[in-house]
Length: 281
Image 1 (cartoon, one colour):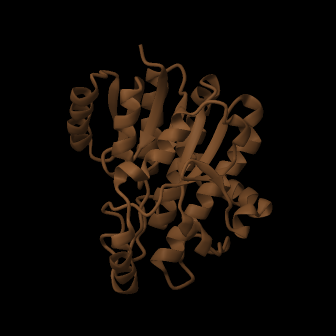
Image 2 (image 1 turned 60 degrees about the vertical axis):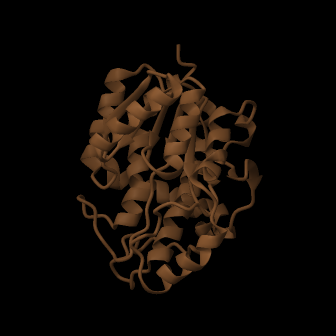
């Protein structure tokens, strides 16, 4: 029988793929939330063949579509009694400003708001499972200077890296607020930097962004190496006292000064709650 029930976004490529393979070998029952169900099913078969773990499942979930996220949460709530681990792994950087189906700037929607909705929709299952929530952030959070009056980059010139860095800062805000608000209910939350990983990340960037990625490529690590801190947080024992922390290389690491802004993270929570209100039912 599976030892833990794990839900993960962004499961079919990069560090998500390596995380699924590693946790499947540890006998986790894994529910993969994927945008491309056909690709997800193909990967599911690969995981079962490689690990002999038959408890691998695919659920359609497009993080750029809040209704799709809500439907994925419905499916999980109809299928499960509890969730032990939720890994918010999916993310992305967008060269030009785009909007999600619901009209939100895409970086904000995919990296933060969709996961915010997913967590809050699944909270009854997370509480029952005394869950550990793992948010994949980034050292890019250090370049963030959040503007709460223009979260959607509608008033300022759009910057792919600044938008991405801000979203990664919001992952840390979200982690710390979860730890504070839901720690008394048995939930722990962790954020992490996976490292500079050699995946398809940033493939669509142009100009200086493309140049920076090209210059960084010789220093990048493999997806397998990049997944190690996520895997560690999913499997480690006796780390709940570190709930709310930011990890690098399997250890607690410091964050930017902006990441310690309690007023900022509470404001983000309140604004995000307003944005997802119609989908929380």
